[in-house]
Amino acid sequence: MSLNSNHAKSILFYDSDCGVCSASVDWLVRHSEGRVVPIAYQDESTCRKYPGIDVGHADKGVQVIMDGGAEIRSDARAIAGCLQLTPAFRWAGILIDLPVLRIFSQIGYRIFAANRRHVSKLLGLQACKFPPRAQP
Image 1 (cartoon, rainbow, N blue to C red):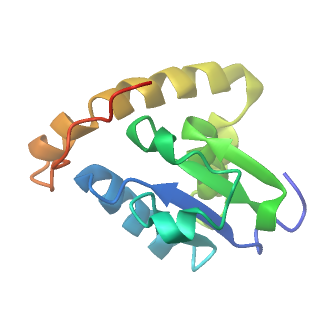
Image 2 (cartoon, rainbow, N blue to C red):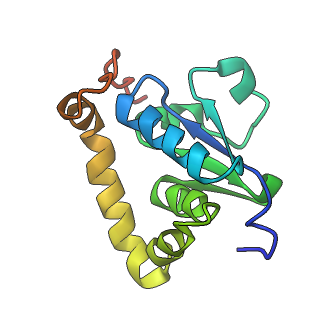
């Protein structure tokens, strides 16, 4: 993490069709004090401006462009990077991104992402209208 990461804006790509994803992104935006800028995978014209972003990843998880383009992270590492931009939860982002815990964070993220439609329904949030895209 660079010394300027607390002040640089990072761009978070997420599935806006998923209720728990949208609620999580809203929370991150509020707590990051504008340091996390969300872009929905569904906004194809904007996503095309970022060639390093894999739009097909929308069914699997989030991606973030950190520090103005210095690094692209996916899934648990993306969440860790975004949490590091929140003053109150920076510690959590650092913790889950520690090499020793990173593998467990990723496993937990994968389990959660695979069940996000069910989690959205359980929480009374919009539950992804569309089924996952077929993998080529």
